[in-house]
Image 1 (cartoon, rainbow, N blue to C red):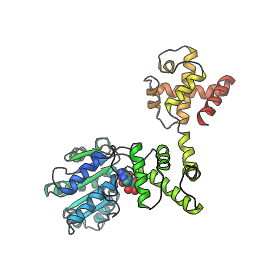
Image 2 (cartoon, rainbow, N blue to C red):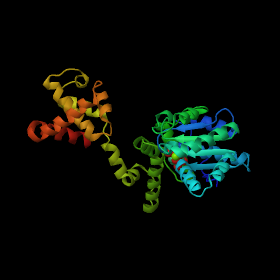
Image 3 (cartoon, rainbow, N blue to C red):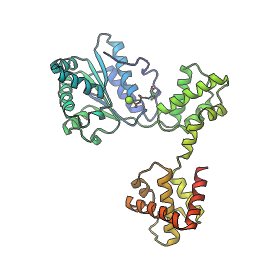
Image 4 (cartoon, protein in one colour):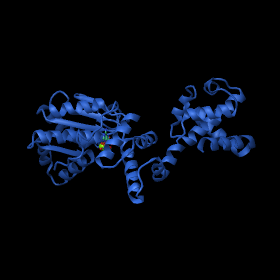
Length: 339
Ligand code: ADP
Ligand code: MG
């Protein structure tokens, strides 16, 4: 049971500012497993390459030590196996299995949260491996100290080796990733087309890969070359969704312009009706058109409390039913922000 994905290698991983540290650390671990970077703890949002890097280390170790026992598994699998072992009265086999590995790679350990018995078992396994100089690599979708329902002693131990963040890739890296994936698929992706996709798909590498796959499939089926027109056609829904993601900045500028006030007025403490009402409208639009939380929205309006935002949203909702001017303003603003 190795479960290593053989295409997740260092060679297939595109380096960028966002993943530089994580990549360097992973390479270091591949060269000197069980040494000072134990455990290697990678954290960051989904689709940013944590699983890929973890496998890359596993694959490199496999190459340099073909007989090494390298075990990769998702933390949910660890939990499930442990539960099964408990039911079958085989917990000592379970323990022995994990303690004899040369390297243990456990993905998405946020799933250990609130699973007390699994944490207990993992804690002992962790200590045994560390003592034996066996390498561990762990990933998580957030900083370990921020995982609710995880024992303090585990959180602290996770920091004994090296903890590195993986950040969302910046534009140049997104372009480079697209070009690399296109080359691997033997597809001719013109640089301006790669740039166009990278500019619009900003969330993570998995989304980027998904978009490229759709473009390639559509080029294949329509027998067209990949250009910006083809991309617009094949990613129509995705791009429309992206465009709807209006920024707070944009909302504030549009609202200020509409009411002929300054953006600074929206952020200010001024409470006069001529400023306060547009501010409330802008907050309500921000709630409707962005994924920002109430505190984030409050923050962007000169550091206001989330309850102020909530109040603004309620007030505007009420006014849109009772006040024809506000109803009209809101409709106009909504239209100019989304088309
Ligand atoms: P995570 O585990 O952080 O959610 P993954 O490792 O599963 O993310 O990565 C998602 C996809 O994106 C995978 O197919 C992976 O190969 C690819 N990927 C992520 N980062 C890179 C990169 N820097 N270079 C090449 N491919 C990448
Ligand atoms: Mg992953």
